[in-house]
Amino acid sequence: MSQKKVEESHESHSRILSRDMRWKYLDDKDRYLFATPTPRYKFNVIGAGMMGIEHMKITHLEGRGEIHGFFDPNERIKKVNKLLAAKDLGVKLKVYDTLEECCSDPDVDGLIVSSPNYTHISIARVIAEKAPKKHILMEKPMCTKVEDAYEMMQIAKKHQAVFQIGLQYRYKAMYTEAIHEAFERKSLGNLKLISIVEHRIPFLDKVDQWNKFAKYSGDTIVEKCCHYMDLLNLFAQSKPQKVYASGSQAVNFKKFKYENQTSDILDNALIIVDYENSLRAGFNLCMFAPQTYEEVTLCGDQGRLRAFENEDFLDNSIPKTLLEIYRGENHPSRVMYPTYPDFVAKTGHNGASFYNHIKFMDKIDGKDTLTGVPNIATVEEGFWSIVLGAAAQESIESGQAVIIKDFLDEKGIRE
Image (cartoon, rainbow, N blue to C red):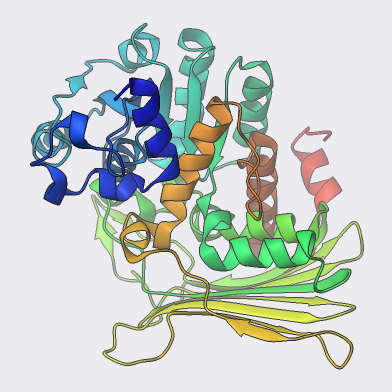
C-alpha cells in the first residue's frame, strides 16, 4: 500500500485505535483501518511536569506530530520523563541543557510551552528571539499579569507561525455543542444572559507547589478560571465593560506553608460581568467541593440552554453529561448527552485536550474550520481572558466594581 493510502486511512479512521497494542502483530503492509500515520512535524516541550507529559502523550496519539525533546530545569523531571518516553511512547527524547537550545533547534517545527504560569512571558521573549518561525502552543494562562499578557500579544502579532493559547475547555463536548446551538443553529435567538458554574476539588500538587501562591500562579481566577473567562467572552461575542466580584480563601490551604511561604490563593468567588453589547454574565466558583461539577446556562430571547459535566466519584447511574434546550411552544425542545468516546475523554479534561491538539495541527495544516467547533484560541482571546480574570481579582481586593477601560488605562494599555 502506498504511503498516501496509509495517510488517507488515518484521516478516515481512529487515531486512537491505530495505537492500540492489539494490532501490533500486524505488519504495516497489512494495516488499513488501523494504519499508523507517519508524523510530519517535530515538537519540543518546555516544562515537562503533569501538563507536559499530557502534551507529549497526546501529540504522539494525534499522529501528525511527534515529540523530539524537552527542556525542564528540574533534574527529577528529566530522569522521570526519559523513562516515561521510552516506556509509554516508545521513543528516546532529546533533553536540552538550556531553554535557548530547546527553542532554536533547527530540527524542530514547533514548541509546546507547559511550564509554570509565571515563566511564560520570559519564555515568550526567548521564542521571539530564537524561534520566530516555529509553531507555538502556549499553555493557559498565557501570563499571570495583564501587562505581561499585553506584551505577549505584541510578540504574537510579529510571530511568523501559528501561536495558539491552550484554552482547551472550549473543546469539551458540552461547550462544543452549546457553541453549535448558540451560533450555528441559533436555537436560542439573541443571547442575553450567561451563567457558568465550577465546583471542584482543590488544586492538585505541583513541583515546588507553585500553584498555591498568587505571585506564581496569578491567583485562582487567572490560573484556573481563565478557561471560564474565555468561555464567557466567547459566548458574549463582546468585550467586558464592567466587572464586580466577591471571593475569599475560606477553606483550602489556609494553614499550608512551603519554604516559609503561606498559601494565599482564593478558593471561592462570585463574578458578575457587564459586556459592551449589554449582555450580562455570571460565574460561580467553589474549589472545596467533593466532586468536579461544571455547568453553563445560556438564556436568549428564543430559548434557554443548560449543560453540565459531573464527576461525583460515586457508583451510580446519574448521567456524567447532559445538555437541555427549552424553546417554549414555538420550537422543538430536546435533551441530549454530549460525550466523546471513553478513550478520547481519558486523554485529559474529558477529551478537550485531545481536540485542542487536533485544532493546533489543523491550523498548522491550513485546515482551521470544523463544524460546531471554534477555531484555535488566539493570543488576543487569551489576553482578554487574563484581563477579565485580573479585573475580577482587583474587584475582590478593592470591594468595588472595576471599569475595564479604566483598569487598562491605569496599566498604560490602550486596546
